[in-house]
Length: 163
Image (cartoon, rainbow, N blue to C red; front, top):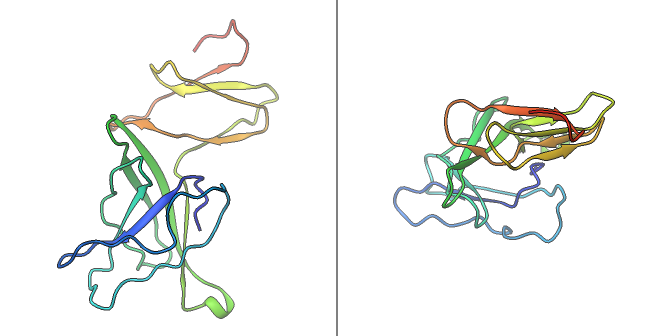
């Protein structure tokens, strides 16, 4: 289940043949959670998958959906920019008649929630682009700079507030 709000594309990591994108993917016109059935070919032994945000990022490192109960982070580099998109993935067994199916839930890796009674602004440290966040709301952190440290600056929405 893609809960990231991004248009994700999946393909199996093949060693002997060209990688083929899974059917039923592409640019979606609606931004809502929809399931995607995905399966490996009979000759595919590695059971590894590559992920990208359609036409926006490079393919991720190979990931596996085999370990039920696993929670992982997937990072994809934005094309032509020194930024990354971080997603979280959770692998679970389906319920009821879907008990033999693995359900992979994909969400934004970082989410900021405003528990204050006032509106906030946030941005990545040293960036000029900021996002306004209303009281009681939450928002995903989008593209982050490449590198080990991820720093976030906050300020009150008032014009006189400082970062």
